[in-house]
Length: 276
Image (cartoon, rainbow, N blue to C red; front, side):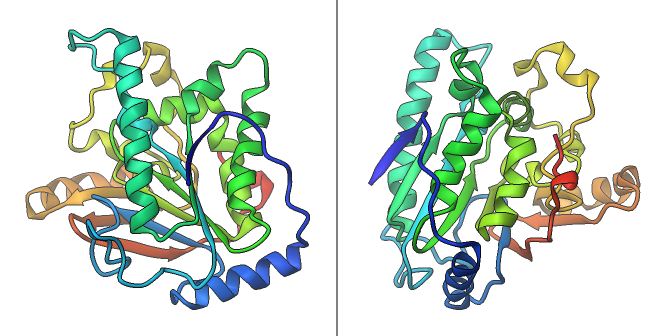
C-alpha cells in the first residue's frame, strides 16, 4: 500500500541482534552489505535494480521491504509560476503519491510511505525532530524485512533547507546505522548524503531563491554519509570537477554519471557524527 506519513508509529519490539540478522539475510540476496548507500543521478534504472515501467523481474530482497519516500526536493515552490503556493503544494503532493505507487511496483515493496518534511516542520503541536524520528523509525525498523529511505531529486537548496527545519540531518544518520536500512539518494538526494552539499553550486542548475537569505548564513552541511557527491556528471563537466574539487579539501568526491549508480557500504556512524 501507499500512505502519507504525518504521525508517529510504535517502536518495533524486535531485538537489535535479530534485526541485524534479518537485514544481513535480506542484503545477502542483493549482494549488498549490512547497510548500503545508493547514489544515483536519475533514479533506480540501470544495472543495480533494473527498474522499468513493468517493475522488476525479480524482487530485490527475498523479504518484505518498506520504503520511506521523501519527495521534498521535487516540491520546491516555483516563484515564477502563476499558480498559488497552495495549488503548487497540492499538485506536488498528488505527484508524490503517484511516484510512490510507481516505486512500490518498481521496488517490489510491501509498503511505501510518503514523508512530508515541510508538514512535519510546520506542525506547531509537536517537536519536529522527535516526530520525524518516530515517523522514520516506524518505516526503517520493521518487525520483519528491511527498510529503505529513498530521497528524491529536485532542488537541492530546498531539500537542505527542509532537512534542517524538520530535523532530518540530525536523526537520519543514526537511524540508518541502528536499523541497517538502505539509503537511496537521487540527484539532490545524492548531494544531501554528503558531509557538504556545496557541489550543488558547481553547475548552477538549482534556483537558490526558493530558500530565505538567512539559509546561506550557515554552511550547507548534509547527512555526512559520504564526503560529497556530484550527480549528472558527463564529459562537459569534467573540467569543472577538476577545477573545483580542491574546494572539498580531504573529502572524497563521488562522481555519478547519468544512468549509473554508486553503491557504498554505510559506514558506522556514532551519535556524535550525525550532522545537524
